Image (cartoon, rainbow, N blue to C red):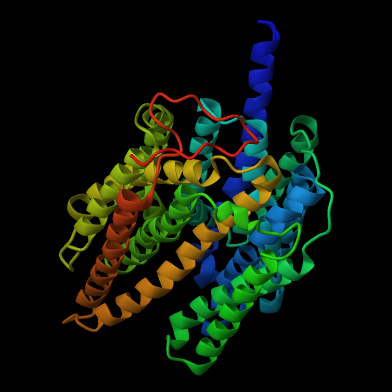
Length: 483
């Protein structure tokens, strides 16, 4: 490559990464941006309290249940093709959501948004893996992906608050439309289609996986209102478990599975998968419970609540810029372990919340620590989980990683909401009860973080060894010796 063409290629890759990450940002933001708008939506579209929950749950069920399917479809049909179809569906459904005049209309639009996100999101990660070989450039790209994914949750709160204050709840949907159109225009211009892989589509695996994950997600969501002992909830969990067990049996027998079980052949990767079920739940718990506490306990409005999370987002962005160098020098396991220590420290600090707490004394410090920990941990997890995955499995690998991450948010939140409800009963006054509940939830999150730290120290191996040359893309990385 000549000196003249190298900068041009670099600029092209920067545009490719920007296009992919803006899509990922939209998908992540729509997880939380609607939450701030729910009171206005309920008033205008006359939702019942139970029905209102489906504005959020419709999106999460469709997205979480179809991620594996979206990832494997990209492997077989072309990742850019699936990415483009997902963005198109997401954009159209956002427009429909903004135009909704009936409650059922909005819920249907949210389900379509979730389907579009599940088609696009795993192929964002797969396209990044296909365009960057193992090594510093891929680590840097994954670092930026991690920051976009993590920051999007907090940015959703901030952007949602500003849009509602400036206009109407409908703009939390309309804002996606021009951005989606821009992505659709730029994708065929800059993003190269990946090779497709011949073979039969694993229809039985797709059905059991989608139904099993969707059932599990629905069961977890239902526990928030009906409790863990509800008969319907128990039946849903049993059926979901049977479907997922059947899915594993099917994947072990078909020639071209939707989730190749060889992804679990590497002990290092399996340990990272376990941590992907643990760590993100604690980070999401801070966003979820602090969002409520800042409004109920401190009396913050939507814009102020969104701005309150800016320190975490800014710190996270700064840390992610350095993670690639840290991984190169120290390996992924030390970086992951240190990150979890920072997350644990933030959670321990938040357990001290009380009715007399203030933002500067009791919230700002934990958010800064969480920004450091989230930046270190999410990048190390993504690098470890995706390192050495075969090129033909990159879509399935990305779908599995994101499915585990999404499941972490749902399962962890369901458990911690139960802890929160029990904690609110120990307060001596209405103001004291939210503080007790929030503090109790963070005690539970701390336990989860400690389990993740123990898992890291005992089971995780580094995907990148200090000073070792990176494995070539499309190959199964050599197993690193335990550190």
